[in-house]
Image (tube, rainbow, N blue to C red; front, top):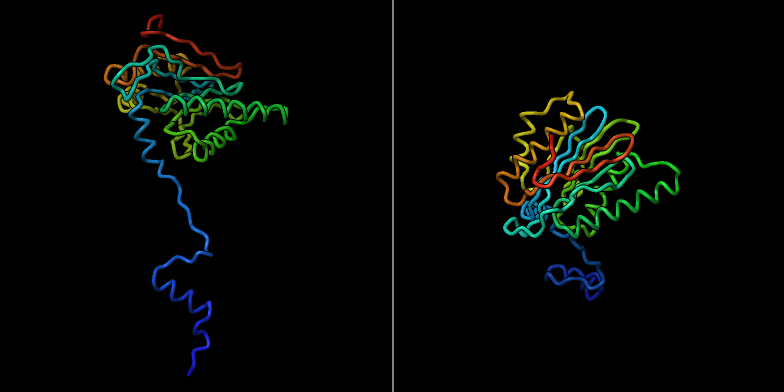
Length: 242
């Protein structure tokens, strides 16, 4: 009995499928770039220590001041690694310098556009979600910043990983010096810290990291985020701290 499909387009497609030959009319399925684990490793190699602590009335962010090449050569000793991106929020620079700077410029532009269109400041939840989406979908390679801010709901500290994950916590650390800094934070942190106590704790944690992490050092930048705004001070070689 004759096969009614013999020689037809259907039979040719079946033969092509069995032989492993691709169908030229079928769309090709792409793949996502393999960036997550690789970018996390790059962040650790670039070297830095950044810390965020939320208190009842403010957020304290502290960062070291060293820029290094792979944690082996000090390329700059006075880098400001925390920037204001919102009337009541600041973001740290962690990882690739170019990627982090571009990330901050993009976020700052979106915040200003939101305020111009709606006549109000963006909430911290919206800002953290936007930051995570940018980290996931934008060309910002090897970044792992901390976002700290205050809004009507209170104070907030978020860590943003290279894959776009956003996690809120009472305190967090990112960068190559995080293992040492976390030890100091775990020892000194209390839920009811005052702003001054949080400041001292953050500075102590950064200082501890600079003692052992070659990618961190040369002093500390401290940002205090309150309802009044963002105040950023620098202390080269930790001088001038009480």
